[in-house]
Length: 287
Image (cartoon, rainbow, N blue to C red; front, side):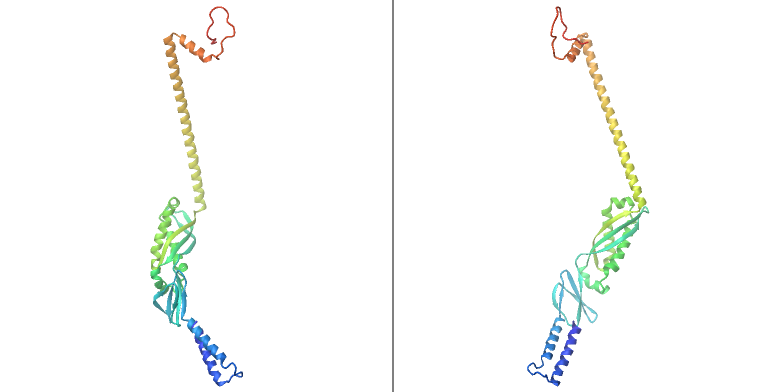
């Protein structure tokens, strides 16, 4: 914008000078072209002194290649027309480390896609720009560090622990990664493990182990059920034996008559005989 303003000023000066050398043919519109050029040049020059910083950004100001100490916050600002600004985003960003491969503590092949959420340290935005003027820190700095961190952390866990302690592994990766990228003035917020898995042979071994465990659990349950049923039968037999013993004791005590009456009562259908002959009639026929 500054160069464009200077160009318009030069053109306006040339046009204004030419207006005195070459008289306009139509004197009703004297020197309109030169006046318009001057106004346009002034507007462009004023616009080059105005800049706006978007929300969630700060701006670094450079003057002939030198970076200023102070940053511009959100909103409108006036700067020298020969200065330049570069916005730095302070909101949450993400970098993907796809198809990360590593070896576990028990030498199993592990792969995963990692998603890293991070922000630029607001207090170090100027230093970040000085060390990386292209602001390609996500691809050049954070992504390679993520791959290395994944390998280092995975090597500390067995394959089984990587499954059972997945949250712990993610937290360990985030913590270790933060230590690595602190020098780049970046703050790691969290790391998510996506599509986490192992080799095909290891997955098959896990499936076989799960199947074997399920069969063992089923057999154990069947054994427990059989044992329970046997205990029930024993308890039932013991109960029947006790009942017989009680009945035998009652028979011996009454000389047998009480037991006969007890069986007669048990077999009686509740109906009395329709006819009765002479003589004594038993209570019920138990044969």
